[in-house]
Length: 404
Image (cartoon, rainbow, N blue to C red):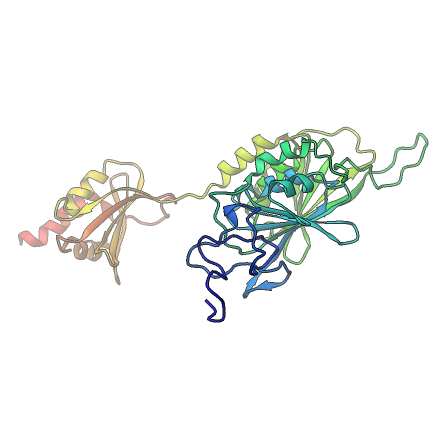
């Protein structure tokens, strides 16, 4: 703490401050509740809000657009799975700041709108005009969540609550594409709604959030250079179409979700004559199928213990009854000494340092009784290789030199 500060001045565990105001003697307030208190053991996290780098840490813009295309409650819902702190700013068309929210882990940590703070500021922000612009940025801030203003799920109720405020509630804006009277249908036109990055919000979360719209929306997935990698169209909770290169349908969505090229996105509202809209599947069904198909496979520990309790021959014979692809690892708490790979009663391979094959198994069987073992079921399939042989034959081969 700065030695020039007088007692009681500065940030400590019981102090409180506003997100957009540094601490000054006599003006500190607690309108936003204890959630504004700095985390114990940390220095002051936030002064007057500004863009760029704060204390050497980057502020990354994730989403931007207008409330005519996506209401404030939906924007906050997109953040519900994130664990990092996010700042959501609302500005008028001319760029004047209306207010801001700080969001983290599905909670509204703080809110301010002019001189109003806390839940009163939330009510003001939730009734912003439809032409209000928003910007969602990731900003490393330290806040306690124990006394947050509420959950992002509560914002919808605030949006419907009467305020007595002069600010007009958000209303749907008519399409900006020009229309002409007459029997000739107008070609479909894409109107950009918002854009952002996929390193904070996964594509499935965006599909679930934007898919609630009754309008036809198109999500264009782009690489780092901004080149299109694929597109997914949604309407009224249904996935209408999906394409990634020459791939279409469900396979295209899986490719876009897992591809390292998928770095950013742009969302468009499609207006005009779109004709008959097909239906690929519901957003929830697609999300479930993709999540199951792309779930990372992990090796699973079946059992572990000390070699003083279970010898390696007994372990190999026991594991040999399983048809699973397994690995028996030997370690001494500091490092892995080696491993024996098995499947369906057959030893596939073995390694111990620079040793491989039968010599590696011989080396592992001479391990100290205080060493430990770990048996794993391996997620990856067994490699196509010549096996060392059945477990029973290998154990007999290893016992033979001892009997001679």
